[in-house]
Amino acid sequence: MKAVSILALIGCVATVVESKVYTRCKLAKIFSRAGLDNYRGFSLGNWICLAYYESHYNTTAQNVLDDGSIDYGIFQINSYTWCRSGTLQQKNHCHVACSALITDDLTDAIICAKKIVKETEGMNYWQGWRKYCKGKDLTEWKKGCEVS
Ligand SMILES: *[C@@H]1O[C@H](CO)[C@@H](O)[C@H](O)[C@H]1NC(C)=O
Image (cartoon, rainbow, N blue to C red; front, top):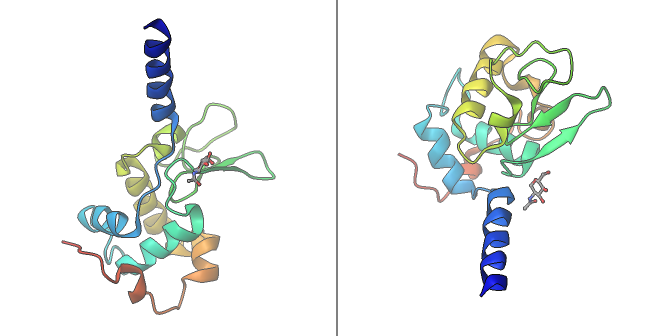
């Protein structure tokens, strides 16, 4: 009895920490509803392509860079300029905790990504986008997805 409840508890904890990886179409829907389609002229395909090459749609993706800063979440937003992680000298332009950029709820990550696009050189901020999405025909990325 006891062992069972302990196992159940471990199961719950494991579920909480588990990373969320969205499907392409689920992401297309979320992005579309959040007003990303054609935001600053970037079609939905650009956003899906960007998310794929930056994080493979993994909301909890984190990568430490050479300078010690960390890229967070589905859009791999960097802690040095854009969010607050409490460890480095930071600008926190998005006025958000970096930890809020790696949750299943993409609201904060989307708001911050919009700010980046608006205040820097569009999507050029992202290497993944420059390398694999920029200037390409991106209609395939939302193919078969129902976006409203
Ligand atoms: C998502 O990213 C986290 C953190 O980097 C990693 O631990 C996890 O294995 C990734 N999930 C998948 C399905 O790749």
